[in-house]
Amino acid sequence: MTENTFDVVVIGAGPVGENVADGAVKGGLSVAVVESELVGGECSYWACMPTKALLRDAAALRAVRHLPGANAAVTGELDPAAVLARRDAFAAHWHDDGQVAWLDSAGIELVRGVGRISAPRTVEVTGADRSTTVLTARHAVVVATGSSARIPRVPGLADAAPWTSREAASAQAVPGRLAVIGGGVVGAEMATAYAALGSQVTMIARDGLLPTVESFASDLVAETLKAHGVTLHLRTEPESVRRDEAGTVHVRLVDGTTFDADEVLVATGRTPNTAAVGLEHVGLTPDDWLRVDESLRVLGSDGTPIGDGWLYAAGDVNHRVLLTHQGKYQARALGETLVARSGGEPVDLEPWGRHAATADDRAVPQVIFTDPEIASVGHTAASAAAAGLRVRAVEYDLGAVAGASLHADGYTGRAGMVVDEDRKVLVGFTVVGPDVAELLHAATIAIAAEVPIDRLWHAVPAYPTISEIWLRLLETYGRAA
Image 1 (cartoon, helix red, strand yellow):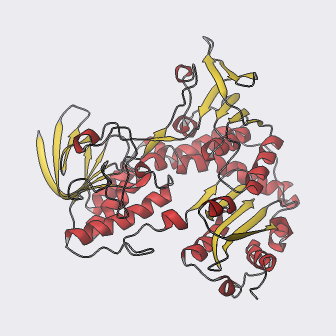
Image 2 (cartoon, rainbow, N blue to C red):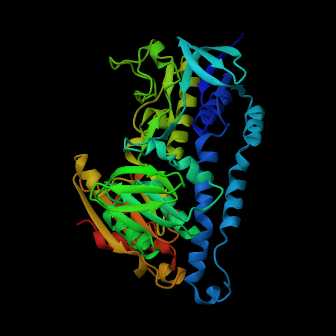
């Protein structure tokens, strides 16, 4: 058994764990990171990067086909093998040498194996060879183990060898028929990708397609999916799933509908990776999400920090926002928090303070890479009302903006903004249309900075660009009296 002591021990070397470690090391602390799989985590190998690589070729081809001159140069169809090969490259062929080299260059110690909290400030790591390394933290232990796909309790589903997001992101062949259970982001993006790659896709979405976004956006995506041959079964769910000896998957819905598929993808939410973390040794329940305070310290059942506040959780595992960029945002704040507390310095947790993750509540951006893309930040009209805000929502036809009509013939899209009527600031923005992802950061800045609507009138969009949508939304809203 080997024993080592560090200022901070991080369990999980995904993008969140890496960023916590990087911030702490830059502040002068020594850090060990524990990882049982690939350094770089879910995003690098089974989520963000490979899935967007699966989607990009089809999006580029669609863009070309909406420009007559460029379309004349297109003589073939999408090449699935080339798409998969490019995807493999973005996943580094599922090798983490480059990520490990980065840890080394940053001065972060990597310990391979399963990390388990065994006592206060103590993490016991079991390696693949069953060797044991005990890591002691002078200041903090950080849990950054992320989440995994949740398999719902549908009779026969678990025995049918379903795909999760991992298998969908790393598949080496395109199934002829793909059933997708779940209408959220993963389900919608993978339905888009595999339909473009040639699968006959059938989607089952109990709560509807993309139920948490503005309806004008989800409705447009639903129309496009159907136009691409995707069969949508909305407001229903599977009653049973069975894979026969020949490999065919038979799906029966609660409304009596039946259909067959070659593979079935389950995209119905996430579950925390906390089963093996040793939560029972700090009075918590394994497999639970970790509740945290504003500085990301893990809270016990009594609502107070564990021990003297030595245990932290960042990223998916704390269930604040299950998005990679928000996890990295939390990680950057936490790295600086650990440095400050280790030196006895005050921590600024006021809204938008240096050590606060305020954007988790007020300015979460997200791009959904469907056809067309959806980009949103902050509230929808419905979530703002549920939060007790007095708001006004306005919408505008994105296709009517000069820059959009130049971008593609027959451009179809829509944008909307949500304004807090008491403070006269933007609290929500959603846009749907081809290639709208890069419009998002302007809205994120406006919401995070709480720019008054009257000042936004002076942010003049260049003509003719799609960003002119900002002027059209402000005109629809009207100037304050």
